[in-house]
Length: 280
Ligand code: PEP
Ligand code: MN
Image (cartoon, rainbow, N blue to C red):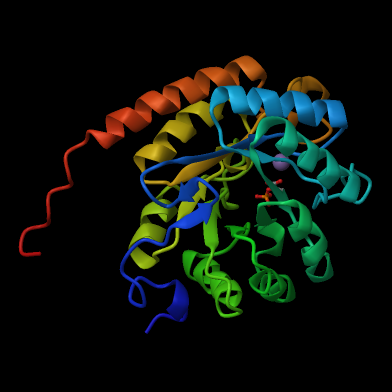
């Protein structure tokens, strides 16, 4: 028996759909989340939100509480950042997602956002997972830097067992011996999650590669691998970004990619059903 009963396909065979107003995640519509790594200013958020909307993504991302490797790096604008995000939602109609890092911050962040994000570094922060499980917001659960698929599924169980059934997995690359890329994007995890769980799974090729030029090819591959959506880092001027500029798409590249992704989606929708294995 799997150690992740509630997340498993055995406990529920049909795909879980997560509804956010008129949006459905996990069904045939793909969900695109885009925005800067960090909320930097009101202007930056409003400009990026308009761009994100123009490209066709439905959800705006932006970190207000940033988990930085060094304590001397920009830590985020905290609640002010959430206010700017909420204002950008008002201005564009986009939904918003932002990371929560501490269990006691869950009520505050949940007050502002449509989706709570749990970052890779907190995938096994069990107190945080449980607190998110007690909120009524969908939770995007990123894969830990060195987490196995099984550990990731078990982490989701902490959220589900508190009564929150709205979990979205996000593959964001894992740590390997490879150093050319920031992380090794494990697209095979998408099909593994699809087989093992009824919950939706999306891919973050920005953190998954750390390299802007690899974001488009990996985004296309992620959709082909069966992902339910993507999370992309986008910045009006990546050279001046306070966080993750090298992996952030500038406006023209973001718009071109979204155009390609729509074509990819249309192509995938027309693919014939996979032939059943002999004897199945
Ligand atoms: C992020 O998406 O803002 C982030 C910090 O990513 P990760 O947790 O995957 O490193
Ligand atoms: Mn980032």
